[in-house]
Image 1 (cartoon, helix red, strand yellow):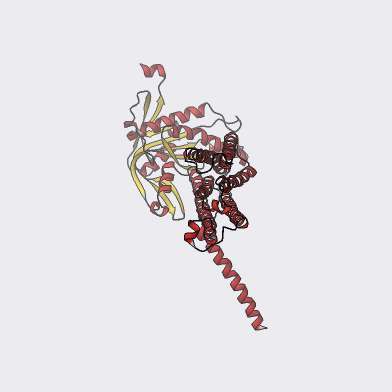
Image 2: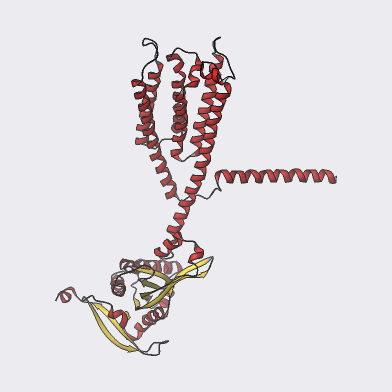
Length: 469
């Protein structure tokens, strides 16, 4: 009983080992696959590229048949002029089929059945062309086995690789191999008494005798080339799918962190980015909703989320318009930076202009299906800021740090005391050169965390006629 159980376990172990070996062989040849569904826009893009590839294939095939026809027309004829000449007929048929296929490819996406039929017709016409040589030159069928036109088979197989679908390459190779096998069998079956199957290579090359091994080598070559192309396409297609998925992930990531950070992450390893920081003078804008707690109590949870999304959409637009980057959404507040991580010329002035436009947008907008009018307080400060990815190696978040950031947040709160909606520091005021802006001195204010009072200003946009004067 024990021996039977051991034998059964051994067989199961061999089966598992063989299965794992085959899987490793598959991964080695074709690369590790990704079975998850691609986004629809990526799928549509691939289909568009395949349609374009079919047009390219058609033009290349047309060039081939025209070139072949020209070469045939200008080459000296070694056959009797009055004899039957099937080669021009096959060339004509292939020319007509290629033109028809190219016209359809330009007019619409080729259906699957048409693509399959096209591959088969391509090979059948090529094999028919080669087969017709023995009739044209009045030779036994074995004559066509030495035709160099067989090399066009490899071109036709390679053409199918342009579509980037391995199935059509396999089909093309199998049809070609089967076609040449049929041609060999036909030549053997129709051998006249003067033709023999030989092993003598010299006799084979200098007569119409058949060297079966040479023809089998051609079939093997066709199949091996097909296999290599198929593996290459599978690996390349999976790499393309992976790249498309990663590109889609990067696009999605840009919704959560600044574009500059996304570009840096995609061009470097994440390990290199972890712990890195950038120190630069920047302007920080901190905006917060007034009476958000009271508003939240009046709304249903889904209405509150909808209102916040509408509000953020409205105030983020001016920030981005003037070159700012949203670093964080904190409840009902936003933290934006100008000149970090993206470089922004006149960053202090850009931050002030975006703050004024935020107030203008809120003044003319309504939210929650037109039932709410929202107001925001804004604090702005300029100075040396540290920006970088913080967190753990497997979970990072981009943010800005420093006393400059903290002071901007304090100024936003200070608006309650000063009765304003925008407050900014003296350093920010110094860097703004726009004469259309009116700065109003609000005095020096004691701010928690600062030993000395801070000079603060509010700002308004002058009317156009005043600014022109």
